[in-house]
Image (cartoon, rainbow, N blue to C red; front, side):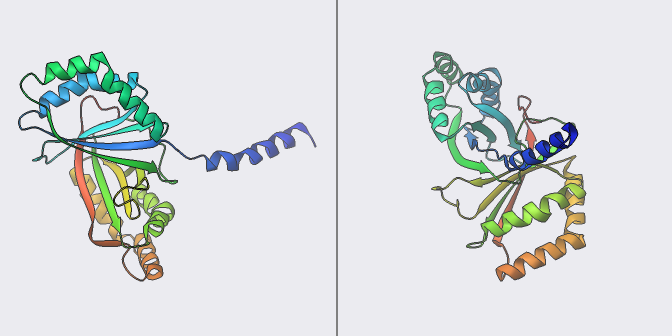
Length: 252
């Protein structure tokens, strides 16, 4: 065996291991409901203090967004940790950090900034693009949440893996992140969460119109629903929120 053949076989042997590599980190989506009139102050605290302290304590800032229509004063953000145990360690250290305590105290002289917090723990799907910060301009973000009919989470993941993500890209959408919920949480057996990017709201509408009319999508949808004996999502089980990145978001 000559050296060139040996190298080619070595590379080929290594390829399955590379392809099988999966992001095993723990992702946390946190939704903050700012107290009335306090959203700008909350942004300032994140911009000036919180994101830096998260990094200091081993958390990865994936991105920060606010809904385009935001009557509830929401801030949505995603952090990544090596695992769930690391998450608990990092948050404990963050909450005890004197710099955080000082920033929180100073920002809340005139009242608390956050009225309510929601937290969801997630795992990356095996077909998600690499989950890392990125930027492009201009673009808006669409957070989509699917609730499947009983027993059909694997089927909808298969449809996205084999068809949907490719067709999204074909019609001008950017696939960013795809997650399922970690076990033990409400909805963990029937929820898919993902994030797309579009040039703007008009481009989003045009892309989805073309996607839904695509014969390849129609065929894939019909085949998956025939196998399942009906729709893969419950009635009104697809939720979409159009969002803008904050000026301090790593993903913009």
